[in-house]
Length: 65
Image (cartoon, rainbow, N blue to C red; front, side, top):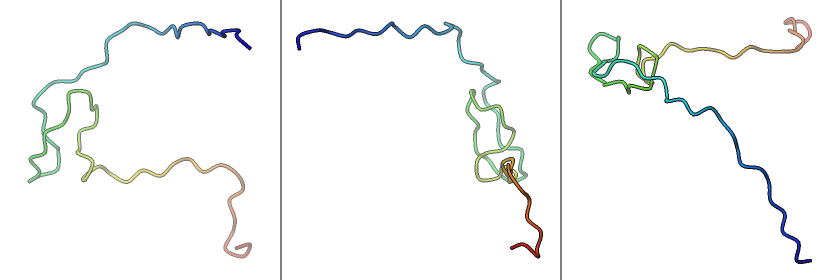
């Protein structure tokens, strides 16, 4: 088997990454963590509010568990 298989090149959109203002600091009072210019959040990772993913499927009652 000497056949060479070649795929097509990946074609994506050549646009720059979205940037936010530089020099931003975490919004939690007393926290001095600098945020990345590519991070759109207003809090650092340690102070970000807890977010739960969307749960799919049947929601069980306490009786069913």
